[in-house]
Length: 427
Image (cartoon, rainbow, N blue to C red):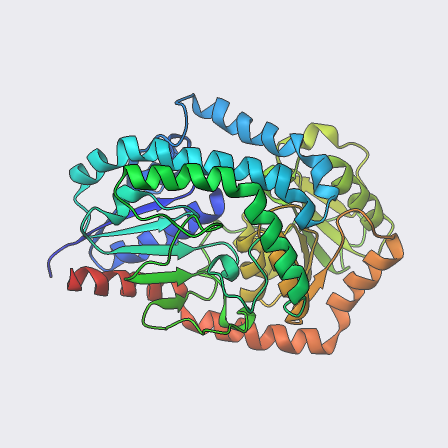
């Protein structure tokens, strides 16, 4: 067997990063080499797993700590916008995100050609929402990984990406697309000019990326996929059924109260942890309940005092090791949290605040695997009713059991690695 080299370029977020790590580990188990192209702030993450990693500047170079603080401040500065409906986030949070994303593509183009020439990959996998021309033009097969909601691959019959709308709300779909296109048009024009400078054809308004002509890997499970007007061709689109990463073991602590009560896990992700008022409200509610809870509070542990005896907080939890041990999960709708709950058969209440969390919240409810909840506009009685339904509803339990068994039978990491190696063989 001739050893092939596989380059992975995930966006600078732990969800995509760790999913690519899992696939890369499976590639190396097959006897090949995996290399990472990385935002400078994530280089040490990949090196920590034993991979070669090459920094690619996606913004004005700055120390990793400063970059991490930038995104923390960015999210925290938008907390007032988290109270808005997704369509009303377009001209603030969504617009500012796309400004940064377009800028990242321009910066990456400075470094990528030289790095790719040095690495000499046989296949390149990119997990992002925007085209990097150098990857498309390098002359080897490239794979798009979609670690966000499945509707990142658009279809007129399904809700637009980031909208959080029901499948049946066709008028809402039109309104969201119209506003999104209106707001992003100046950015889109700028991006199309960048594409032209780099020998690429312009994209239609609203699109910043394309499906790979070689292969596209979706983290979504088949049980949650949308009903499209044009089904995705399995020769070019494959579902990875969650592709759950491995993590260190976790032992549930002994609680001073309710130690035999149902166990909840509450997490809004590392960035969402800045919404401390909401987490404190949930902790207070749980403190008066029959449950126990593990609550991820990120870097804000110092802001919590006088915790109830049935609540344990932490700055980080090895989530794939925690979720199998709990009875229900309250989370923000990040795609890893969404798919991990389904993979382990755990009901979820999703309180989304941005990006595809809105889509996943609607999807978990529409597919009968849990509930969508408003982030702030809820009563204690309403939240307790949702938690109790998660714990006791036999239809939810049966659906989760079927979905979990299907996902666990698929082995998404090995499937992804096999598909990549097959592409390399064709190269």
